[in-house]
Length: 251
Image (cartoon, rainbow, N blue to C red; front, side):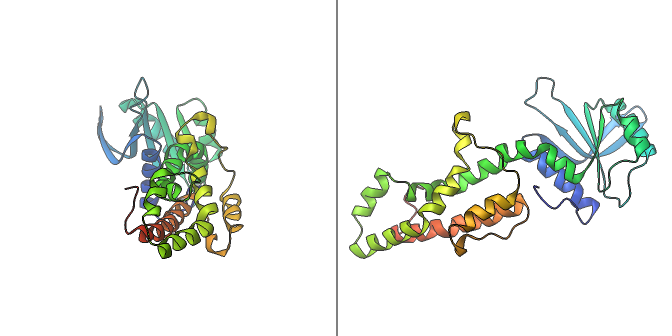
């Protein structure tokens, strides 16, 4: 799961949906006002896939209700979809649609989903386009500090006093496995041949890091929080190597 599937407020749900769509590459806006034959309407989340040939337009209705959505809401949304020319419509809620509403959507371009289902629908794309990219950006310097062969690092290391060289060796022994492990996440950026399976759940990833030692135990239950935790840890470790050299030698 990318983040908590039960947002506290409608605004949190709206922001979460918009953020996810942006992170997978869509142009997304909150509270987009559109003109219809009946007047102006405000769409909770409006997104366009600019990379698609037909610039597919997504309209999203966010309902953070603690009850399932009735058919009347779907009827109203269908009208809006028709009048503004939406290609795909989502009604995202906590409890999904009532049975009659589900039946009605079968003959429309509207899909009713819980926020959890919405995240699962786009998780693989989000993981490949956003998570992998973010990890790749943060781990670049650390990867070069710990990789087996790096001419720039070796050249700069040879110029350091013996005490600093020993400090580097100590850090390398301590963080080699961690640095290489984080680097695995970014391999799909360079070639489809290096792609790894999209993880089934976050627990498996956390367990693998925990095997490296108590220092590498993460507490997050969702991938977005895990990314923040991992970023913080990578930055801390990278800074330790920077301190040895007096600067980030790969900046």
